[in-house]
Amino acid sequence: MPNFQCGLEVWIANPRISDSWGRCALLCNQASVTRNFEPAWNVAQRLLGSRLHALFGPQHGFYGTAQDNMIETGHVSTAEFKVPIYSLYSETRQPTPEMLGKVDTLIIDLQIVGCRIYTWKSTIAACLRAAVRDGKRVVVLDRPNPVGGTVLEGRVLDMDATSFVGEFPIPMRHGLTAGEAARFFNQTIGAQLEVVALEGWSPESCWETLQRPWVLTSPNLPTMDSVHVYPGLVILEGTNISEGRGTGLPFQFIGAPYIKRSGDLVARVCSLLGLPAGNHPPGLFLRHASFEPTSGKWMKRVCAGIQVHVVDPKKIRSFDFAVALVRACIELSDGDFAWKDAPYEYDLVTLPMKLIIGSQNADKKFLADDFSVQDPFWNEGLESFATKAQEILLYRRATGLLS
Image 1 (tube, rainbow, N blue to C red):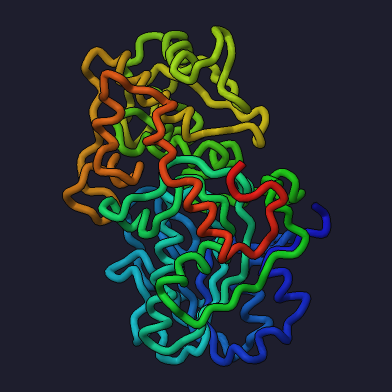
Image 2 (tube, one colour):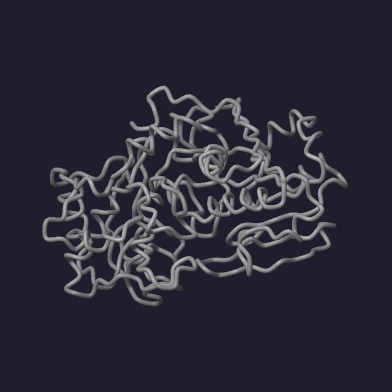
């Protein structure tokens, strides 16, 4: 899509659209760049001048350096900027009245990854709530859903399983852009919201068609291969299965010391997915692999498992694959499989897997004698979400939101 423009680039091409924004702050990070890698903060300084009064950063920090969940970053002042940089993953996860005191409009430019389990959507919602509280405007410079805007996967979040990685009833793979997600949240929040829409984006496409490199949004999503499988493999965060943190290929290396033979793991995953022997999950190749994490789960222990290779992004259904993968590891673990204990994203009590799947019954479903990947439980609520989301979509889906 050589004619594609993200919201930031649309603003550059039409700088007068910010004339009515007054005094501004900008929420962004190192992935908020143009096609030519110009950072959003440079654009804001150039187009706003003295009207730029503050910068904000999400989880992982303004420069994307913090590695893991619940690793907070502080507020900073640097010689590079004449305005403060506030962290929204610190002692506060919502802009305070003092932070917005000199601001009329909070501009948001964040590249989301298409998965419910990502704190930035909660940060966007927190900014909308702060805007209502303080009478401010929010402008979202839209960015595309990198895994496309037509496929939904994973059950819609139950409202008794909310957390900072899931506040609203959306599926694991939700199909929304950053601006559409903000509009969905704002149905219940009611902030003054404006979205600078994408130009030349097809919801049927994925990132590879945009003809621009992927800039890592966070340290453990460094490549598009990791992003394509993240809406499924993120559920490994709720287990003692390594998702590859502490290796050069997070969310691509998968395994544990208690997996004895990679071939058995691949065979059982494919069997649970109903695939003939010798086949692989759609869009993926599961290569037998061993690895040794340098940090995180199983640090300095050799893990047997797989490397997940993306061969056709449009065919990937990562959630079903990941559900089968967890069940296969349970069966092959000889009792060494375990759930990760709380805390998880500031919930100090609830089993993380329940928060990740979005149901208080998640662990029981994985362990059930009649377990099936085809159980409606795993994709409950998708049709109703697809219908409700029609109210806020900014870009026409030729095949609908549920395909």
